[in-house]
Image 1: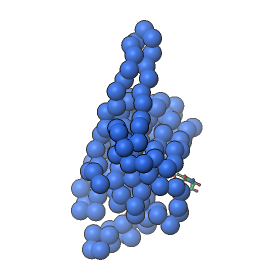
Image 2: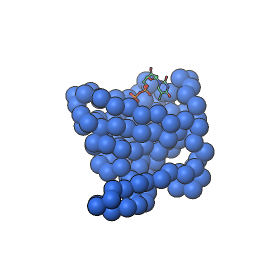
Image 3: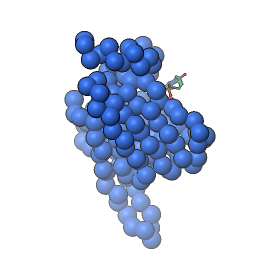
Image 4: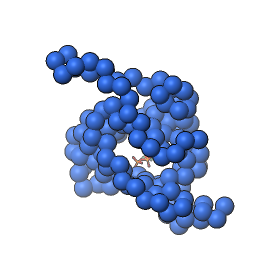
Length: 134
Ligand code: TYD
C-alpha cells in the first residue's frame, strides 16, 4: 500500500479544445477499482467526512469546484490537501481520518478499492485513536 499523496494525472488537450483526464486501475490508480461514487450540492458550511476506513483505499478528485481535505494518520500526522483542478487526485490509503470541506459548486468523484461496507467505517474519532495501539 502506498502513502497518502497527491496523484497528478495527465491533462490531455488544450485551452482551445478542452481537456480529458483518464484514470486506469493498476496503472495510474494503484488498486483495482470496485466502486465509483460522486457527491454534489454540498452546502459551503457543511463539513463531511469525519471518518476513517479500516481497509478501503481511495483516489478522490474535485472534477468541479474546490475541495479541501484535512487528514490525520494513526501516528497523529496532520495534513491539508486542496483539490482545485480536475486532474489532481488525492490517494488515501486505509486508516486515514479525513474531514472534507467543499466549495458550493464542487463535485467530488471517488474511485474506491472495495464495495460499500458500513462495517469498514471508523466513525468515532476515539476508535480511530485506538488504532495506534493495535
Ligand atoms: P459517507 O461516506 O458517510 O459520506 P461523506 O464521507 O461524504 O460524509 O456516506 C454518506 C451516506 O451515504 C451514508 O449513509 C452511507 C451512504 N453510502 C452508500 O450507501 N454507499 C456508498 O458507496 C457511500 C460512499 C455512501
